[in-house]
Length: 182
Length: 182
Image (cartoon, rainbow over all chains, first blue to last red; front, top):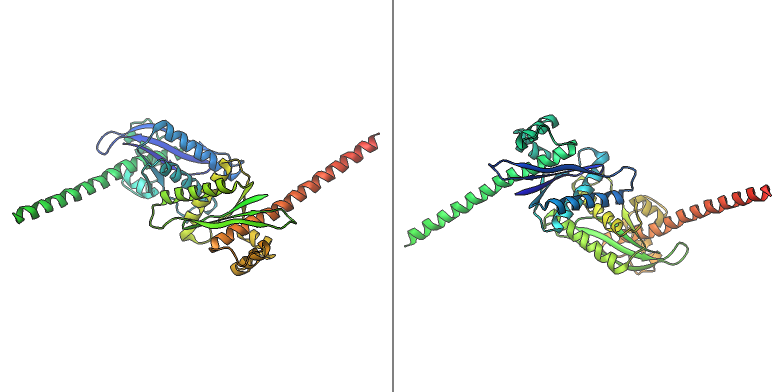
């Protein structure tokens, strides 16, 4: 499974592509930030972010996209731009019919370090360790995007296993019902 | 000048097209709301809004787009969706190279009623009067979008007049300088 993680932002929108599956080694295919200048008008900045994300989708053809969930209560000064950038990310993915999931920062941190309150350095260290890198991806926004992609693969795997277990159980119940019915 | 006004929202995104110029009668060409269902997933809702706005741009080919400026401090529960919808609106316009402006709700109210604190009913009444309608456009989000379009024509007109006056003044100064130079 190949996942594009996106950490939305106007000045630096983190992007990172991770390939792998739960229980298997994960590989980092690419990580960077799509940048737009604060001197540019907002509509043009959003178009720049859309173009940047489209390029990453074209280049890596991911199977799914994971976007960080933005909360209104944080960073009031930048939250509107972040929300707008996240809207662009969601549209870029959904327009292509790609499954797209939102994960909170604490979900990503918990998936990667075991604690939803881990600090940036801890997340960076674990991201590097998980992917077999010498250090965390740079810039920090790229590392956050990579963490989201890893979180998506692992959580998606867990969710899929739960769904599979439920399906197996239902099949057994149905089988037992039929056996009794004979 | 033909302006598409957009009042961003996830459930009802108001759209309204007004044609005219400052000092001349204004005509309403169309007003409605692009709707998406709260039962639909967020990424698909945003794609629905993008498609809806694209249809209005295709159909009416406006010269400019006016979008309501969203503030983080209002309506925390819905502000993220509103911000994301506004991001989509800005991208749809900027992608086509259309001039796009953001106006605050108070700017729109002040342009139309003379008071930035006018209530919805007062704005609706004045919108209907300005456009020669029997009543305000429905739903309320459409009326807000129409108010934005009117605001844009009138404010744009005022801004253009200021720019023209400045240009005229500079030309006279230059002419005086040359005349003295002879």
